[in-house]
Structures are given as C-alpha cells and as structure tokens.
Image (cartoon, rainbow, N blue to C red; front, side, top):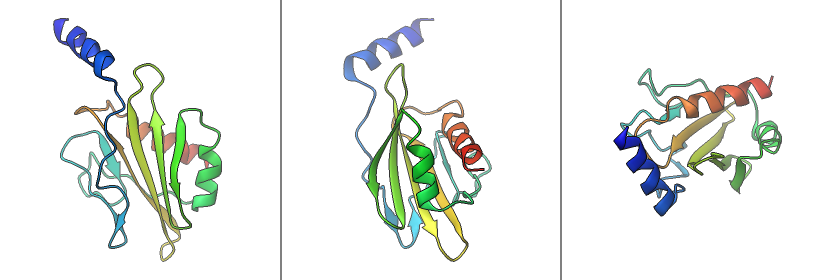
Length: 136
C-alpha cells in the first residue's frame, strides 16, 4: 500500500508527461526498436510480448480515425510518417505512437511506447487494437 502512495505523490509533484524520446522518427526505413521494458509494441518487434501486426490502412485513414480521439495530439505528419502523443486522462501519462507507411507491403507499420514507467498493463497494445477496430 505504501509504494503506490509514494508513486502517486511523486507523479503529482513532477508531472507525468516525461521528456519526449530522442529516438523517434524513421531511420533506414524503420521505426526505433522497443526498449526491454514491457510498455511498448511494434510491428517491427519479434519478441511475442512486443510484436503486433501492422495496420491495413494508409496514413490518411489513420489520421482521420485519430482525429476522433480527445486524448490524441498529432505532433508530426508527413506523407510517410505520423507521430501522435496520447495523454491519459487521470495522471496525464504520455505515450508516443508512430506510424510509418510501407508502400511495398501496402500497410502501415507502427510503434507505440510509454514515456515513463516499466509496465503499461497492456495500454499500448489495447490502444492499437482499438484503433484497428475503428479502421474496419
């Protein structure tokens, strides 16, 4: 009981948005790999707890779906790349979600990662699967 109270107190005092990572963006036609922590999913990942299928949609369709979500803020948008910040309602945790159009395969590759903490309790995977449902 004591540990959650300490965590909540510290989080309130210092804020929960965290500093944006420096490894975001496209390098050699790929998004950054997930860290070793279980708070990230990526269509480029091979570890079962981090791997997720790409989206069968283009960036315009994804951007249209994201525009319906109050917790989403588009940070960068190009014809091939989209970076979105998702902010949780209660503690204002920020997750960085990146989308990369893969013209060769006709899908959008993705990476969704929490800025802070070790585990996200499946929040990043759930968000992508919810988005996948919106795109159908």
